[in-house]
Image 1 (cartoon, helix red, strand yellow):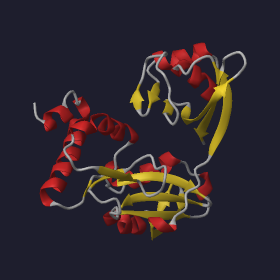
Image 2 (tube, helix red, strand yellow):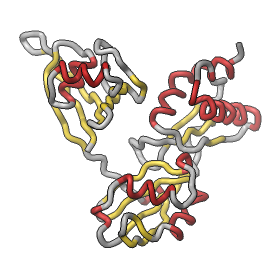
Image 3 (tube, rainbow, N blue to C red):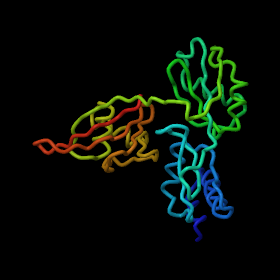
Image 4 (cartoon, rainbow, N blue to C red):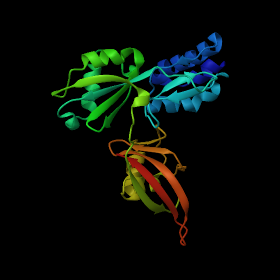
Length: 254
């Protein structure tokens, strides 16, 4: 079995995405030039990370328009200073603060664009920011005239001109161990038995991959997602109490 077959093994519904990623890596090696993927979701990127040992010698770097982006492009290149083909579109208008993420995404998709060409859509101060492939930024700017009943003004800009403030709630607590159910109970400020329900009910994702094991050990900087209940990062493990309980800090994204 060659590396491509190993990379795609048991890919299921993700086979098409993974095949395109692997082929980008091969093209970069063959042509001796940087090659970029479209935007990958957090789940798709997690699957690639799991299988990256099967990608030949070309390394990859990631960027989604700002530090901490959820949806990212991969750049296959030996050089870390490649310029990613990403631009941002500012969306402004009276009443823009009343819009929600699905409103923006739905309006963008109604323009006939593919989801893989659009990165994160982030709320700013009196505006929304759309990160997208650079070749569609002008089209979004010219075509996105109304979102959820709000008339909009759009402005294309370079990603370096956009400052994103990632807000989160910092939650501290103590746990007997770093089991998934214990950490999730702190994250959601709920009982351990309720956390177990979420995990066993296939609502819990660890680093964007489904996890149904309540005793799975959580490590510092792991990303925890409970469907319909939020996303967080275990930001710090800071020692033990006199009774042996472990102090942890969880940053829950707002």
